[in-house]
Length: 211
Image (cartoon, rainbow, N blue to C red; front, side, top):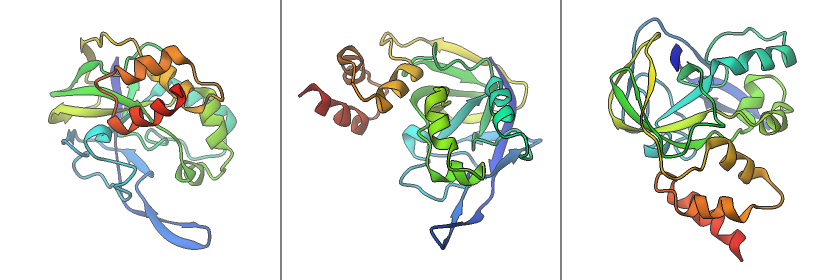
């Protein structure tokens, strides 16, 4: 896998339900390396700390291969890397193969896969159409958040190399499908509850489906 683009955002004012608020989803490519910190990316903007940033969502990765699919659906947008709010656009990122708990080297950083991105209304604002939320869920390639185990820098052209594969086989796609499935698969629940890299609150939510 390879870094195609590193992207940073600035505060952008939007209108939602008649009220002004700010978002950091509007990200653009940067010509300089970015620095991954323990809870966010240096010089990036995180407005809603409840849902973004933090230990388990320090940095967001998205696959460059998915762009063509979305360009066909939204051809009139001004396209560039970072459209999905990702800090790092990766060539070869495959959510059906990447396991939650996998550890990767990217640039001089060491990161661990933690969870898929779950879309909210701000993605709809970015794409000027709230229909993208259902489309994004149905498409099932959500990208992934990572925990930063070792801080460092990432530059365009850097490789993303697997260091340690998780023994727990729960993939990003498998967990993402579980989140939105009407009928919850019991085997997937067991993988969720025994996955050390998945945040505890995610496990607690899954437990209720065992009843």
